[in-house]
Length: 106
Image (tube, rainbow, N blue to C red; front, side, top):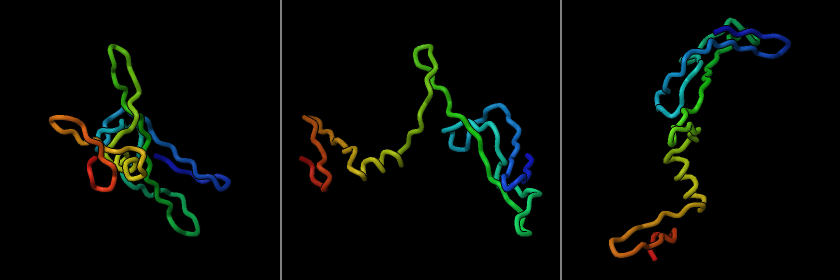
């Protein structure tokens, strides 16, 4: 990795490598600093530190075709639920009951 300051613009050069799974497995990392990295660039006498990651989303195969897999997660679903955009459904053996958001099932 290299960093250079030209006309108040910081240029960062990262070597690209074969995609490798991130620590969570949600993305494939193609370049990065692997933590923070101290550059030779200084601003007001202070060293500039960089932490960078370049990644792609894995391709999901569907019936012989490749499909881009969008990021998903419990946190995203929880945020939608908290904003009232998605309401959970509580299922019973006999029938389905809908959660009304105030702690009661109707």
